[in-house]
Length: 265
Image 1 (cartoon, helix red, strand yellow):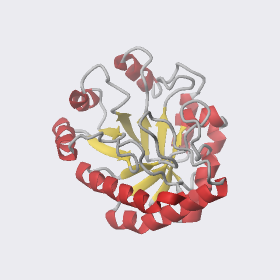
Image 2 (cartoon, rainbow, N blue to C red):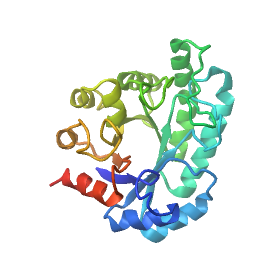
Image 3 (cartoon, rainbow, N blue to C red):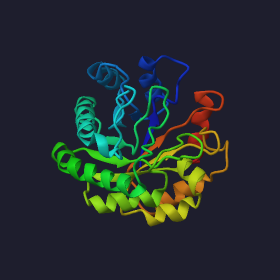
Image 4 (spheres, one colour):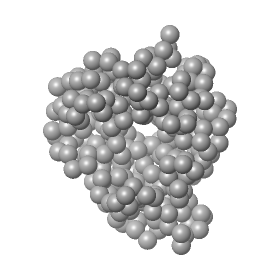
């Protein structure tokens, strides 16, 4: 597995520019970036390179601008494809392989744009259609989009892609090796539980894993998830993709790192 630290959630004790050095000093070679939020991608790449850290992934459909189109919005498909193409360009500059994709856009306050005028079937069909449009572009550029089911009970009310099997079914309908799934154990625990059996059922589409505990989205050991069992199963099934710690430290980043490293002792 390629262990990565999500740079927006960890090491918030220091400015963004100093976090790459913190990640490398902690023993990690990979980081995940949510989005640039107006930062110069070439400058961000230089910071990563100077620190010996590789940016493994970033959002493929969130620019940091409010009101971005979402994958499920049937009225803005052309805008959505253009947004993903923009993010693909950033990924190439940053050297990132993975684009994290979402069903919905977000407003200026971070609230989900829910598309109440669309049926669930229309949202699902729009997502499949957009992904089939993007698949050959991703394949040409050597990029992989990873769909992320997120919980709609706590963090993202109105978010359409909120169950793992729902995401897996959409990915199978697209049928591209460059369209795959993120399994975020925090979101999955909120919505459905049954984590280990679910992992075993999605091996054909699983590409990427997010770790944080539930409730709270803090480091392992602060909530109800048995992370050592999940690590054991990931090893048993031969998972070798990215495992990103999307952890909001309960106290400090140093304490959170100790909890993460304890999973492998």
